[in-house]
Length: 148
Figure 1 (spheres, helix red, strand yellow):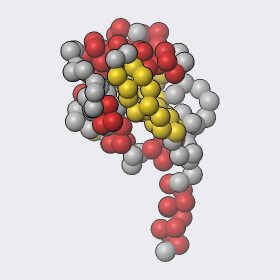
Figure 2 (cartoon, rainbow, N blue to C red; figure 1 turned 45 degrees about the horizontal axis):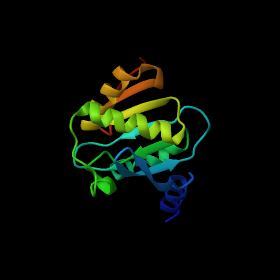
Figure 3 (cartoon, rainbow, N blue to C red; figure 1 turned 90 degrees about the horizontal axis):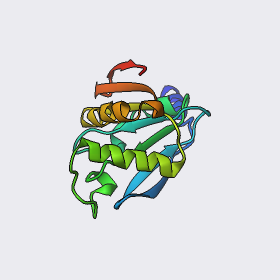
């Protein structure tokens, strides 16, 4: 019991996220904002048919060392209702730049899982000055990264 209690307390040693809806062009999306240490936030983009909650297991560890931002891609999670269909990856990049501009975030470390990795790559190519680093994940346990 002592070991379990200690692990549970350690896992909860971060500020729970603020959750709010943000208007992104022609639709609303759910944003989860983990206020962490100041600096460039880590933006996590989920895989196809998932939503930002796919990162729940790694949030306690990441939130101790960095500010985190998660959002639901168009057509996924809380953004599935009422959002016009995705036209292309460039369309998702337009959504992301609108989101960052709306939130006043000038630069991010961008982490993308699977389909989210494709969005992250397209975003990095189109907006290199807005990206400090890029991390592409095949799953949340393996990560290859580089700085553009």
